[in-house]
Image 1 (spheres, one colour):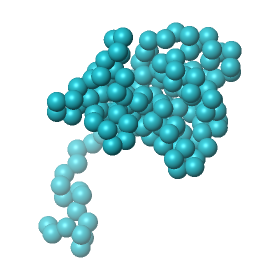
Image 2 (tube, helix red, strand yellow; image 1 turned 45 degrees about the vertical axis):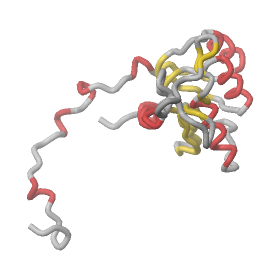
Image 3 (cartoon, rainbow, N blue to C red; image 1 turned 90 degrees about the vertical axis):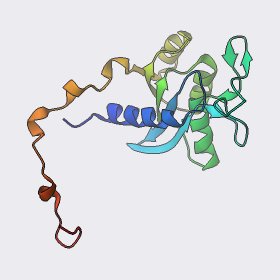
Image 4 (cartoon, rainbow, N blue to C red; image 1 turned 180 degrees about the vertical axis):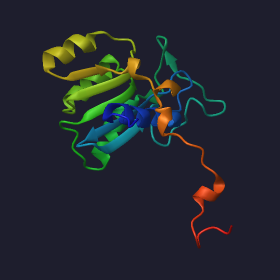
Length: 170
């Protein structure tokens, strides 16, 4: 079965999260306009600065929060800005819902839709999103599982079935 667009882009955001350098929580985000990715980002330190995962560095904790990292949503918006790409009207796919500060930045960047994987920390985003007309989509129940695969389209494939004349030696 073919993935819907939201599941497709959320899967990409999950892959982006694998680049995160926060030892406490790995978050990935992407910005999409007209079914095309315009920017990606993950949580990690400022450019050219040590990461939490670097040997002998660790998290920089203040009030039970690591303040060394820039959140994935902000990094994604920064990547768009660095490349001169407008975020107005874009959809943000993020593996965790934005914290309050990131939510305010997302709003001011003109992003009109937020799809998130897991809830993180601040429920004010729900009321504010509704008041602002921002579509806030909880995708935590849309996790892909093996049971989502249409097994009727899978068949046994042998190595000879993949032979392309002149491309591989048989």
